[in-house]
Image (cartoon, rainbow, N blue to C red; front, side):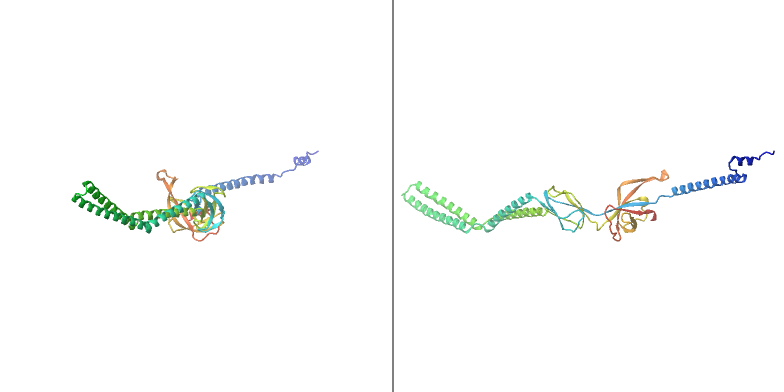
Length: 353
């Protein structure tokens, strides 16, 4: 009986048979697959190294800014009522809030009373003495004149009688002394009359006028302080913040509102010396506003100022390295960008310059 071939034994055992040709073909394909994989891996590594070696995009980031003004009061006062809220658009001179200050009302009453008093004194100094007073002083002067004339006549008679030996020297001396005294009194009364009829001296009028001017200045000052109880917008813009509530006491100089002029924004950004290139006032730069989805917006440079801080740039050769100074640049939109507000970022592709 002949022996069963090995292949037949395998078939009888139920295991699938592998042809020798197929095994050899697989052995030939496997190195090819491994080689292709290595080539792809090396290619990816080379591309990655190339991309990593490329210089990063030179991008300058700026921020939108706008003029901001604060609104405060000059006098301590209490918030009575608000006439504007955050987000409102206001015009210059528009009322924002009403304040109350009883102290200012009291000062106003004092200043006006002082003005009334000084004006009365000024009027008296300009008018001089009343007619009745002048007549009274004149009458006193006339009476003194009459007394002096009588004393003079009496003294003459006494001298004659003394010469005749009728009266003693004592009586004569008394008459002469009375004549001198009444003459002096008459002259004093005359001077008083001249003074009264002449009116107030120019210096006194000047003092009265100066007092009136001072009182009027005090009234004007109080009126100015009263005007500070009405908070007015100093500039067109948008109410950004409100720092007080109704009924709160606000001290002198403490801001109550901040107003932002969003109608005239600009972009502020820093540029290093090695990025300066042809940068100059009036130059046009283009940037993107991610918040608005705006690309390639044009901005005109309006100001360039050196910054106080220093940014350090290290060159590849230590011997040629130096500290690069930064410059603050301001640029305004060439055309209005709708929706542009303070705080938004603007990205400039500086590598394109």
